[in-house]
Image 1 (tube, rainbow, N blue to C red):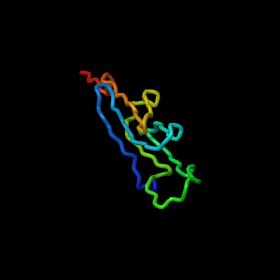
Image 2: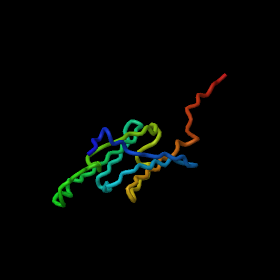
Image 3: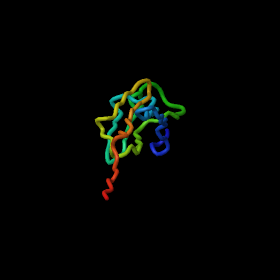
Image 4: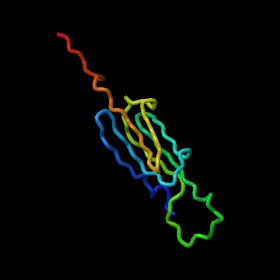
Length: 113
């Protein structure tokens, strides 16, 4: 059994024209056991897998499959709200679409003179 600190979430990040696509492998997780939220510019993903429910199906001679809780954070910037994110979970992969910050938003200072 691997502990949470030794089992990082494997992820891929792809850039598309208008968004970033974050894909996280979560094999064995149920959709209900995944939590995602945004706080202070960070996207937090937490998941849990409970293999203990499978007791009564024989004695383990060797056990390498992970179970337990783990989480990971990704910096996405403070310009993106939680409502702008799209997420789906299918075949053990969580996909989060993160829109790019609008090109029209600038913090340019007008110089008078």
